Image (cartoon, rainbow, N blue to C red; front, side, top):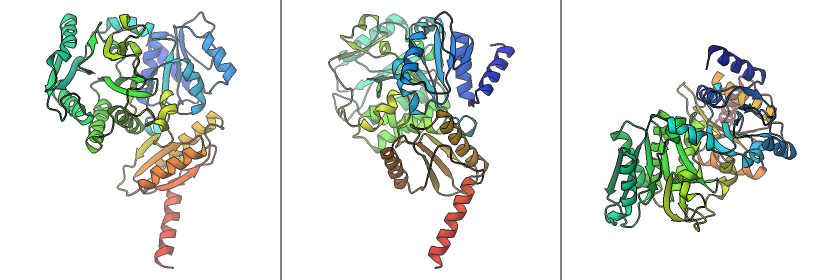
Length: 439
């Protein structure tokens, strides 16, 4: 992009009151380079390419008209996509990726999508960066289980590392064993890593994640259930943070299914930094019997009769709707900020009623809260901001904050948040403590 194009993009964002963090702006610039000129809240006329940036969620009828007007030459960017008002439109589009909030400088989640992956899959063939394929299988299992994978790696001339590892069971690998293997591979190699299950095979070069240059890439089964059968890790600090968080969770909860632990690692990591995630298309996670299996890039040795990849279909029910929309759920912190000063304790701010309020008002309140904490943390070492659409969501968020022994504040969209918001509440807490100690 030229300096003039950068300046035009900055003016466009400023006119819409849109604040983006560095990683989010970099992703938007990349999209403009792929699709063309960005516009704000405009409806494509079906003849032009470009990036459409949406500030407000369209109503049901408007979302349908907007969707019908899009072509594969258009990309849609939602810079305040944490708002569930955008969920309906997202459900109609192909979800390409998300970039997590960037603190007070970019206090929103950015979602990007469009109509199908064809443009990117074609362009990815030009990528010069190839990931190292890594995989593992139990040492006690049949060596032929990984034969198809090894043969496909040799045919495509891809650097790889396929290893038999010691496991508790001869017929499967537990989550903590897989995570430990991935950490070893991360420490051993310098290339981006693409983990593929040992019973899978590659039909074509898997270049999409490295072409997009994201932190992580994975597939969501049924659009909500994260799968660890195909997992890409770019050589970035955020990717390493997610990997090590996943390893820690797996070590702490060895009996819990790997997909759910990966989901929680993603939620924690994206709330604490601008994790750039790509949600891989089904061609990177095809199963035997899929209609498009003959065009798959990665084909897993599983039948399409498998309804769920996890052992308990109802286990992650609380996060299904949020994950389908590429965002965190009510019981998960949307954003986590820490203060630079030596401070103790944490504070949880719960923003309620976000589904029935103007998206701009919700966004402004998020910005006010994060800005106030950055200006004066009030002695709280950690801020966790949760967004709740319904009263039951508020209850879940309160319960999670209570378990962490955080000070809990509940606010509404549009509520005035002064720069001394946190300092004032800290002073109130000090007064209440003094009264309790010296009645």
